[in-house]
Image (cartoon, rainbow, N blue to C red; front, side, top):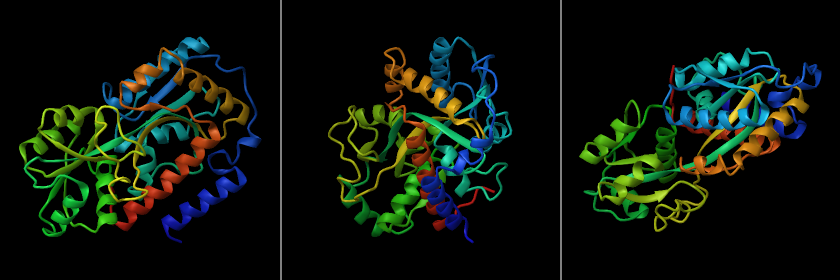
Length: 330
């Protein structure tokens, strides 16, 4: 059975039977009252990065609500998979949690060997916030909209280069999905992070990029890049005249970048809901909400059920995109 088929079947089973990551949660025995000690807050990316920054402000807010410290434990490497594996082997008592970007839904389609099962070994708690990417081109290209860009690229198969912040990232897979949907042939140039990818884009060494809104928009406003579309379901406030890809004749093309909380599988449902409630309360607090918005994310704070459904759908979607493109990280 193919990996894509396996994930699709597991997603269906999880949605119908309420299983998935909580498959054996009914057998778990609630322990002492939560929390009774500091929370270990795993982050699969280096200190100071965008995911780490938001994790710390979220942890600080929830800490003030529950009266226990959040100790951030950065475990970077393998696109966040090291931290996920540590989480999967942790005691499901609510004292070890993971703060992750949507990389957690991308990796299973790219890595043939993971140290955990993305469907069975982790439990989605809540989504903290969601944003989108922005499709930008170098201003030297003689195109003004998405249709013109696609026509231009099709007339030059394999001649246009696109930058990404790294192989297997959202910026990479969004461009892969765009190519699949439009039928264009382009060359991928991966970089080690957002900053170097933007430097070469501005210099004209690459021609287009699906980039982070926070870092790309200033260059658009200064004329160093040209924005053709955003990948969200709605336009963004910082560039209200830039259409969505759905508006640009690619119906249903929505790519979100999100961050969320995960617990080890086997956590008792009552405790899972309690933890969810604390994070949702924090997300919608007047202290935290504007800080999330400053990161160009819409605060969400989904229920356990809604986040579980969203995570499984993302997992299936990006696994298919990666496998259809023949992408592998190991």
